[in-house]
Image (cartoon, rainbow, N blue to C red; front, side, top):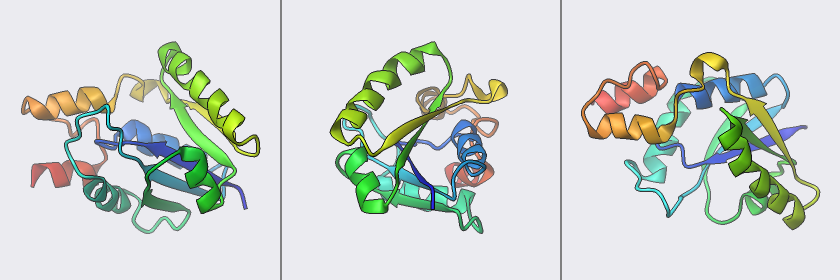
Length: 155
């Protein structure tokens, strides 16, 4: 079984993330969305809240698993039985950021391969950082996040 781990902070999970996971399901038997805690970011929601809401986005999709993890992504891969790390690329800046991480992960464990998928063009302008900023300033983010996320944020 081909399993990919999609690690990130996902604060919040966006339509770009959702699109990437749904497209990855054409390549992998299972996609594990692994919510990590990025200490360099100021989070809006706890990892457990993010986990619960992302599970609602993929309710009924048995090929998607949502977990919270601590530590290195390669260690999470080993524990979860994933041979691939899934990453999305919106632009060349993302590639420049992701490339050394992928190389370091490969150096840490050569059995785990990083797979990059380009973001769908109509979603490439969406980032969690910008969506957080819109939320913090009381803006409407419903166009940028899946319905289950928007519903949660409105409550």
